Image (cartoon, rainbow, N blue to C red; front, side, top):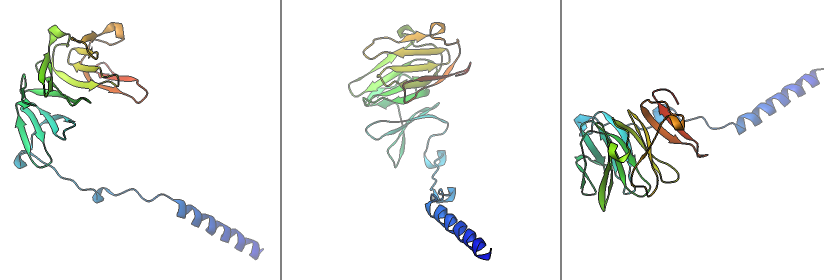
Length: 195
């Protein structure tokens, strides 16, 4: 009986040793990460609403007092992108497109796409819903989606104007805060009336 008890205990210890050996390493503690913060005292922008990083490495920040860019060392408030002037300094929406363009959405309506070879702005007359531009997103097919405080619109690749989406697409009339494309292509819309 004692030999049987000993064998059971020895087997249990061996199984435990194998389990511990195969266990994953513990996750890093929060204290193991570095943290750097910039505020207005260090020259950083305040009230940052959106971030975007263009292919040239610039990190762009949309704020209510202007557009900022960061090169990894210094913050710079700017009224131009690629030498092209912004329509307004009251920037909310921001998106870096795959083609290198920077899309900027304004608090009082409209969006601009800024490229090295020029700028194009779109307003209500161009199909963009009125109100504050909350979000700009590029779809997998290259279309640009704009969510505003008054709805949602899509600019198809090569199109000259946006197409508004509403009740016919199953969307209630409400602010659109976010657009997301899942890996499987499903489009998610975060709106005042729900998802």
